[in-house]
Length: 242
Image (cartoon, rainbow, N blue to C red; front, side, top):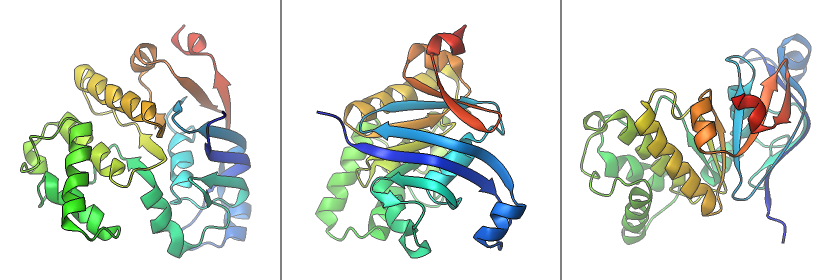
């Protein structure tokens, strides 16, 4: 049986425009970053986004979590239509997907447990027993089960990134989007993060990850999409690693 499609983009163009510009102004006056973009991702699939800095990888991820509006083409993620998505529905979209940022964006005045607790309360969880159970589960998934009382500044860079992954998994997403998640980490720590991502994909959550790290791609081969000259194309891993 074919696995469920969790991301679908057809004939998409992505633009950078001014904050207060209308859709029409952005299309006519903004900078086109990517065009004629077609992409499908299925449940449990692991996909690398590769390409030079400025090639559009982050712009695509931002479009998928609705920071950049989709103005041209068709697009959906986790059952949400990105073309018709209303501003008030963006929080619901972000509860249905997981986002892993390179700069962590943790609450530095709250411990590990409270960083996760705050997110669950903000996304509608009410029963304390269920909240605690879910936090325990995601901390176990990222091997931080003994660190719930620690403050973010007491964690290593790798542990902070694992906490970010735990936060992204709280609402059991269909898709995990990761923007250069190993960019600031040493090779051994990055290797640990990759193992966690592979485990996540094996459980059925699609993982879409931008990276420059070819050694990680070599060690953890998966589907690769190359960003080049305003377009994307599927590439053979042998081409990348040659």
